[in-house]
Structures are given as structure tokens and as C-alpha cells.
Length: 124
Image 1 (cartoon, rainbow, N blue to C red):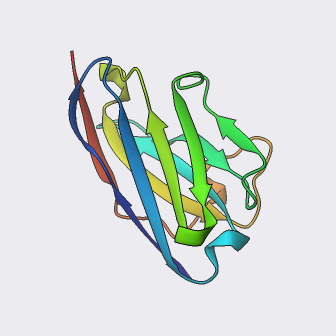
Image 2 (cartoon, rainbow, N blue to C red):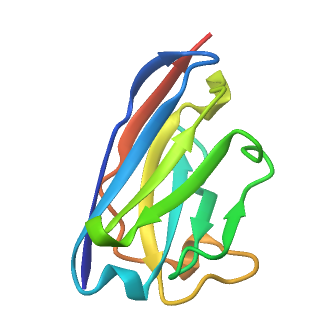
């Protein structure tokens, strides 16, 4: 079982940047693909992006392509989500989770060991 803890959220203005971190403990994190997801009030949880076990492949939702990037540091068992040019519609609770393998079309149902989430609020 992998335990995940997200951090780095906060209140920012439109156009600002934030970097979220997802720190893992427990089983070997490097064996898993990792994903970032978000859920806004009244909406379903959606994938933001994901990264393969080795970091060689990434996936991004169309809504964040060119603005967000995912990376992982195996030495620190941590995955990052760099968010640039933030928009008010990016406001949500952001979660990380892991999967045995990064599918071509990743979805929340393929992931587990969810963290508690970190709030990101972007004001206009």
C-alpha cells in the first residue's frame, strides 16, 4: 500500500503559478505510475495529468496542456505538478493517486491510494 500526501495548494491570482507536491511512503513508489486529478464543487473528479513509472511518458488533459507539467523525483518519492498561467477555472481540490500502469487514456477509476487533497483557488 502506498500512502500519498499532497501539499502546495493555496490562493493565487489569475496568471500566477503554483507547484504541487505529492509525497509517497510505503511500498516502492517508483513501481507505480502517478496521476494528478482535481474536483471542483458540484463536478466529477477529472484527470489533470499523469506520469509513467519511469517518468518517460506523460499525459495531460486538453484543458491544461501547455500550462501544467508533471515530473517525478524517484530519490524523494515525490511527484510534482507545476501549474503556470493559472485560471479561475483551475480552482478545485487537487489529488494525487497511483496506478500499476499508465494507460493511453487514463481515468480516475484506474488509480488508487488517493491522497487527502490540497485546495487550489485562483481569483480573477
